[in-house]
Image (cartoon, rainbow, N blue to C red):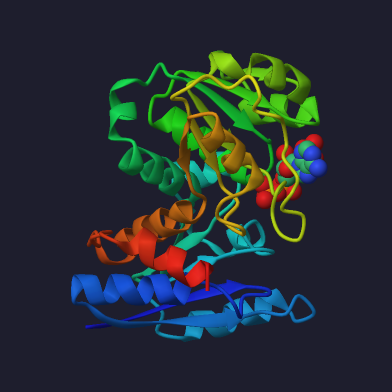
Length: 277
Ligand code: ATR
């Protein structure tokens, strides 16, 4: 069997997904291809989906701006995708399209892979910075993985309140409070685009009060070593880089499509080399 995978979104010409899935196909000794299917927002999305249905495609990833729009074209969705209200992976099987969201689960996998000791400390105090789409995926995946002590800090408090919904174990604080209370957290996860090129000097909060040996994670991967992570490093914390989320959300998508889990050895270093040119 030869698998046929793809990615829909716009603009996606520079996506790293084809490279990642090529590595997975090689590492699992499966035959297949992964193509870029760029859909200009000026075109009819419905027509593009009708064309895609006619193709022999086994699965595809979905990225901006179609993660919500795709939901109207699915036959079913998994629990995470329903909770998050966005889909980044579609399995095409038996003439049905099933939607998944692998971003948050992928993120948590990447974190546990780098820091296996976290597994036993699900009462670790976690600070999530941001309440956008990325934060939503990560929050629900943390809850799914039974992390119990999650605080969200966001510029707009109502967005953070909406995100936690009826979850009574989660709390919301302001970014100013987060800065003051930063020493109380074991794991700090930066989920916004603050610090991304072209403004790499920005940080969402100062980490001045950070306690030693905490874990600080930033989902931004351009640059890999953000100002936020650089500050964390200088204060003797462990840092977790954003590009690993990319790898593990792809790994989970690949598993959904093929039922095979690719070996991830050295892949983060290889991707790091690509990103650093
Ligand atoms: P994504 O889907 O990539 O997560 P998003 O849904 O637009 O993007 O969410 C962006 C997040 O970054 C939000 O939490 C946003 O804060 P608000 O909810 O208050 O808008 C946060 N964000 C973006 N720019 C920011 C800035 N300069 N300072 C603080 N927070 C910022």
